Image (cartoon, rainbow, N blue to C red; front, side, top):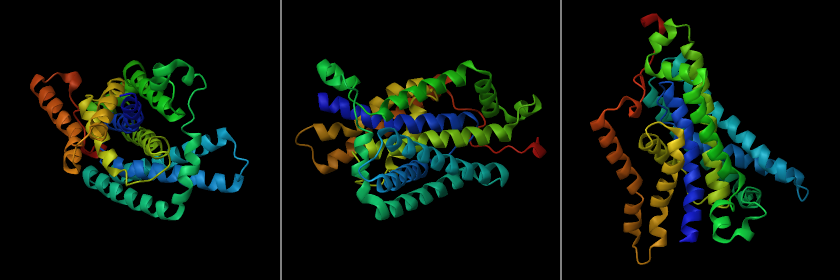
Length: 315
């Protein structure tokens, strides 16, 4: 049970990065289905940066740089994907759904190429991301559950809490939500709709990219066993499950993480049954979506302009 809880937390924080980033993006009215590709590119950029640094440093690698450089590269890679998405959908007026799916295909291809080029270095760099707090061993089970994780696990929670505060308690968050609800009204009030959609998409993709890095470096201990695009689709489902609220995603991500790996901790489960267990997060999301639709409470609904393009000339 202890190992199950620890694994659920580590996997869950991967979902949390992705759902937080997608929530920020969707609050502006942008529906980015390219999050799986963004997470792949984020992981690839971070791992490749780690490869370059460890190759240059050899045996003299610095702990701070071994963590900071991959995180920075991941943020830049994710933001670049968000910039591409925004340029295509805001400036060139491309369809958001088609563009997002194209980004996913592109991101998976990039990650496959990076794996072939630098796959051997991942396991060497992961030890810098899985270092637990020094007092964790002295606290027994409590220390194992809450304090035995690497820096990315705690960073995911901090980013989710900060995002919830910004969205709900600041003027920037109010403007962003106004853009997602009614961009024409926001534009008439002097809010630059294009700027907010560009910024929120780039920031959201940068955060989502960290989910890919966390999955490889922390959860898989540097071993790239399979492409992470399936994890990316679950993060989009988590946004719906937590009704577009980043602080609720902290608990939702733990539930998704536990459901996704539950079959691995149950003896006598066939391979086919394990795949059915992995469907549970999607089933739960559908149930929540039906429930929130029936209740029809405005605070639990997606932004009204989600997925809809806005052009000032057509206002």
